[in-house]
Image (tube, rainbow, N blue to C red):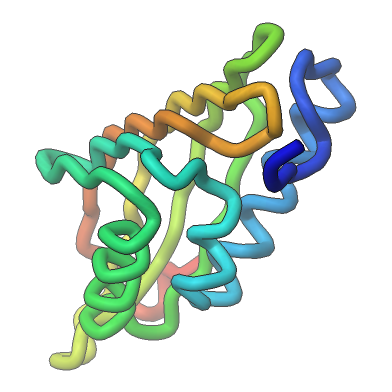
Amino acid sequence: MGEQKHPLPPFTLETAKQKIQMAEDAWNSKDPVKISKAYSIDSEWRNRSIFINGREAIQQFLAKKWEVELDYKLKKEYWAHTDNKIAVRFEYEYRTEDKKWYRAYGNENWEFDENGLMKKRFASINDLPIKESERTL
């Protein structure tokens, strides 16, 4: 048996929400290595218009992300699920080095392998400039 990331599919409402909370917590850690361990070795991503394949590429992408997205804070919400797929709605806030704040909104579609590792992640994301006083996260 290879590596596993519980809970495993098929997902129930409870285990889908557990998987989402685990992802939210991991992403808020801003630790690319920790986060990448939730994905299969050959995981496929679409993040906005960027296509990423594999854990090493995921780690590199995330490390670069948090060099420019400072004070990052994320919230994910359950949208729907099937046996091995979960859809989430999310928003996150960050600031840039020049002290401009943004809120990003989007949706993600996740597909998991039998070991509970995410093998596909497709994210659609839009950024909205906000004032620091408009932050909610």
